[in-house]
Amino acid sequence: MNEIITQNLLSPVVLFFVLGLIAALVKSDLKFPNGLSEGLSIYLLIAIGIKGGIELSHYPLASVWEPILGALFLGVMIPFITLFVLRLIKMDLKNSIGLAATYGSISIVTYGAAISFLEKSGTSYEGFMNALVVLMESPAIFVSLFLLKVIENQKEDYPMVSTQRMGIVATSPTWFDKEVIRESVFGKSVLLLMGSLIIGWVLGESALPMVKPLFIDLYNSVLILFLLNMGLIAGARLPEVKKHGMKLVLFGLVSPLLFGTLGVLVGSFVGLSLGGVTLMGVLAGSASYIAAPAALKSSVPEANPSIYLGLSLGITFPFNLIIGIPVYFEMAKWIQ
Image (tube, rainbow, N blue to C red; front, side):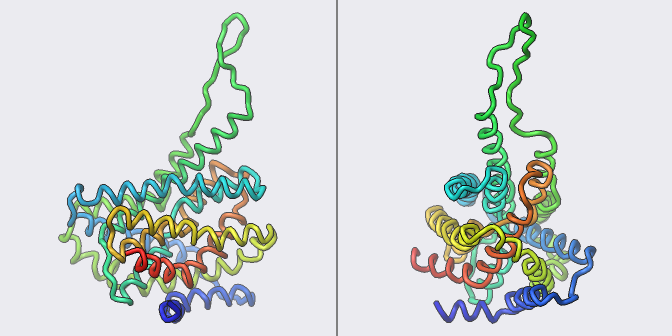
């Protein structure tokens, strides 16, 4: 176990993340241009999506429906658990919903780092796991916003009967508005992932000659640049998380282990391989900082971004990158 953690710590992707973290903490003038940062995000989204689509084209639907159901189950259950725990520690409703959506969704970069870890250790995994990344991106956002509407509606007295004589028009609760649906389904991350997945699935192996040189061969090198930038962002967000107390920091450290364990159990239950079970644990234990914040910004503006972004980027992301991935790998080995 110690050897695996050491091996992960000494990988280029982790060390460049730590370099970015240190640069932010010592207030270095190192920074990425906004255009480059955006470009790296788009590259990773397309690369993961198209690789998943190409791999998915190799499998009949009958062989992947159980893992798909397992992924959707995690995407629905984790927001419920997150909201329950945060309400127990007296977190306000809007920020609890923000964290439920963030932790129920997934981190694409953590997943990418886990793939690099598995490849370095010589562990194979099901190619369709890349497709599950897309499936786990949105359900938690919808579930979290649904829970918010349900709880808010319980606090209000909606008229149950409508009578023209009394001049009362009954209205039913609006569970989701168009903007929420647009941000959740057609936001950058989901659109690029789903679109790239479909393109890869339709074209299959015929797409490889064109996409392999850029989106497959250079993937790990581009991931290093992206993680350097993530280190800079995480380091800048870290002080904001500390302002909200140790309970929140502990949640950011304990929740990935709790949800990662749940993901490993679900992955084993649906019959995945060692690598697949590890990746299911990584997906469940990670937290989003792309899709969920994009949806929360418009649908729950009262939720504080410094909390859900600071916790996911400043605490959970580095924890998973350094400790979580090898821990989920060891859990998967033990269960199997």
